[in-house]
Length: 324
Length: 132
Image (cartoon, rainbow over all chains, first blue to last red; front, side):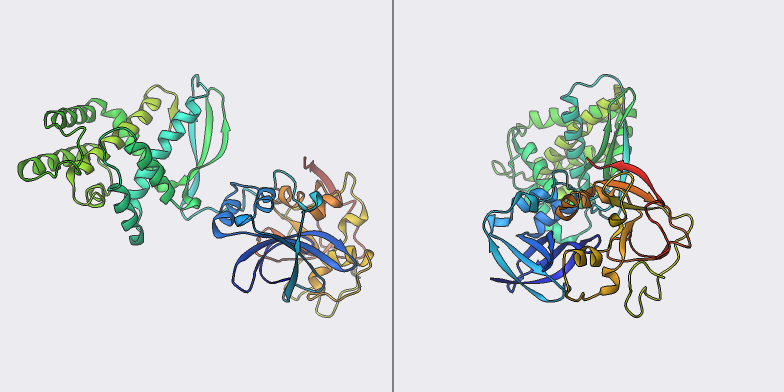
């Protein structure tokens, strides 16, 4: 027997349908009404944690998945309530869950109720022309990377600064996989309710990808892409010159772990960072240097990697296939 | 006066007549619905033989309706609704003669509806769609 205390009704429709309960150790369970009889309403209880609850409430997994995949593969329980939810429920361990006790496939939380963060809005990305299937992977991937980077620079939560510092200094930036891993890690810092969610995709010429995103950050991306589109050659020349100078200094395949920059070299690379930063005109770009532990070589390489991603987004706009 | 025998102070004092612009939706078992599709939880359990008391009998004797039909796509996939084959969404036209409503629960779209005995919810329902 397990003692469960119901703490919240998540779904009520002609009575409680889905409730949240905790045991004496404050371990959380999600409980679904599964049968009605003369004894009352029987509930199936399955262990859940904040991560799984968040995924359900963001509409990323359906309720069937939640009940089929209890946290830590924990045992499921059943209990019957007869006269209200306030009492402590005595839950019995359950062997196999009857198929009729599971929600049907597609039991997603209503989109109208899915969690979304402050400032999150649905944005239209208009698409046109011919798209290959791979473009639908490529474009959103690049957009996500740019969004992740801008999110980090605009994240005002001081508690996250340490995370970003660790992340910006984690990779050697000698080329290769540093950038790929860096952007995956950056995206993981974004709270689920502010991550990019696809609302709808309508492929036609023209069509629309509706995306839920932080509106202010999406606006910054739009402004950046428009700036790059209008001044392609200006920013590209700055990038090319920085690339050339780093090549001349033999720093392209070298990281601060290989060589600690000092004196003139340090000043020179710091200047290169400032030039690219000014050309991109990003808000809070100074954080790149700060998060990089004041190392200008890491900072400029991170900013160069970001520019290449922003440029690839801009190419979709220049080709007339995307309008942000 | 009411479809069900209600306890004292029920419906609650802050329940209201439905506003004319409000649209409400409910899950039913087919088109047209049946009278039992509008049974409250109290009535459903009474028919199953339950005799115990409810902590909140007033709410248990109300019928759930929602202003957000999308929400019903989830509710229809819950076991209790699947077992009763409640997979059809109807729009219910409420009038001043249909009873009183009150928003209840954490979901702003959810309302408890205490139905007048003289009101026929079946004829006030029009089909919106089938949930597949």
